[in-house]
Image (cartoon, rainbow, N blue to C red; front, top):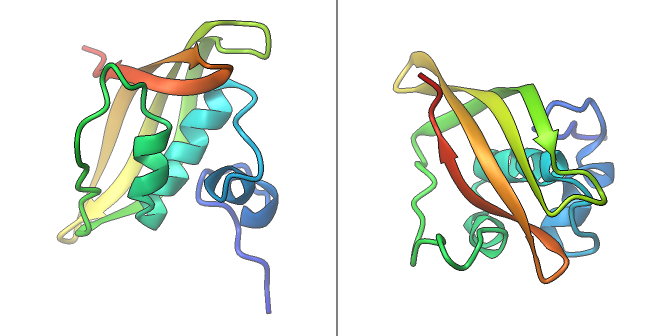
Length: 128
């Protein structure tokens, strides 16, 4: 059986990329790695992981991942900070999707912070 590629676009097999983050074997080392794993979680409908990696100050009580959305690709456009030694970072990305047969994309700059030694998604803004 062929190895499934990770939805996040690295080209790596899921089991070597976002899979260990989703199952709790590893935590994200960088803000970009967390953002990619969150994209994969959206693509796979893993709301538990999404809520777990959301900062407690901004985390919603519940999350509807939009089951009618099919995520088709991710482009990381820019990153600032978010490395192994940073406490904060941003990742600008474009996430491509299809909804009801219509192709679209979500363009966002997400902010990430370290909380308890782990990267967490804080919030995001749509660039003008």
